[in-house]
Length: 269
Image 1 (tube, rainbow, N blue to C red):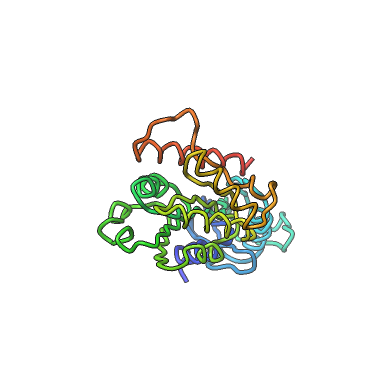
Image 2 (image 1 turned 90 degrees about the vertical axis):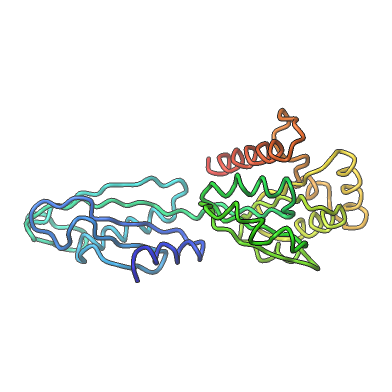
């Protein structure tokens, strides 16, 4: 498997990893500059030459895999018989530097409702490195032609057409996924709010709408749903930055996206 395929596999599994690259070589060394190794939690793909170099790189990569906010690191190796590494001696005669680049698990966002605002929001979020789930019960909102504006997305786009029960998608989302509820139907929104509060492992939950809408929803979530106030308070509404008051779909989308990115930064602190 190529290193590109290995990185793609980790991304699909939502598993952290480290890309290890032989950055520089002076004199004799097991591999040339540019050789790569990908290190997952339990698997590795590729090789930077074996021996002490590779073993040390794997050990350190596994440590980085467990560190939030890990930064790239450069490790220097002298390859001579005077240097004993933790995994033995390599006496090729040269020197090697190895770059370790963490591959963190990206954020996941689910947008329920890909109408005017939802599509504008998807266009913004698609420019970021994340897993973006677009969910709608209306097939005409999810046509290839309409979503063609996302063709050059940086994000991984996952499209879900859910004609009957959109809330079932919640159970399929990755752990920590941030949920934005903004469908065309207030009954659908209400069902999604109830289901989101019953779904373990989600990140933030946001609901678009007015204070009057939220008042009705909160009453329903309490009396019919049986949710406690502390649970209901997990739902943020209105969503977006309050100081941005424009009503145009693109303006609302910018406000929501900015607030979400701010939440990502707080999460990473």
